[in-house]
Image (cartoon, rainbow, N blue to C red; front, top):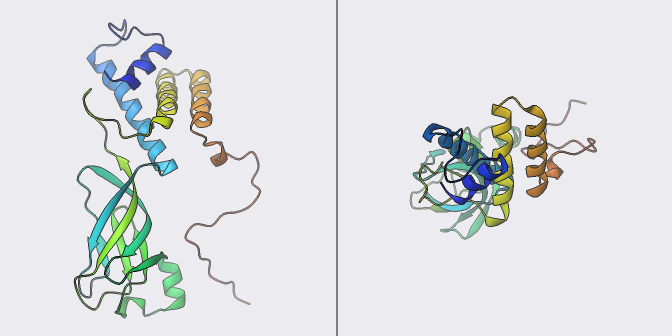
Length: 215
């Protein structure tokens, strides 16, 4: 077991050398909980980045992103290496409103948008092949499966990951009170309290666009 798994066992009162109630299957459950915590923290905080290089093809609008070692989260920044410009994030609703014929237009790409889990849309469609986009992406690490595999999490978030894993352990045992306590500790340690405001002070809109209401 790795250091994070040992910390979880210590907190729940188990011997890290010869746990009393955990056989090999039980340790796997602890590992699953740590993996869940690591993935959630990376997704929410955007702390794990990777570069993805996307080669655009002539007259192609949509591209499937293939990740071999991790899971794609979302694009933070898209840079056109060929034309030396940054692409702006948009969405389909905005494109439909501003330019109904956007799917037919070709030219240097100026905007990008997410489509589902692993697809990216480009506006405008490139008129020639050879353009390469450098995408700065937030990614979610695939689960580690052995003691020697690295845990892809910043050191500053490791304590929070342990606390989230402990919370999941108690939840699996039906102990809602302790599960909630450890969940709140994890949220506080990872500085995620801003995602759980006490009051709704304002409304936030994702996608950056809202169609104007009819007058």
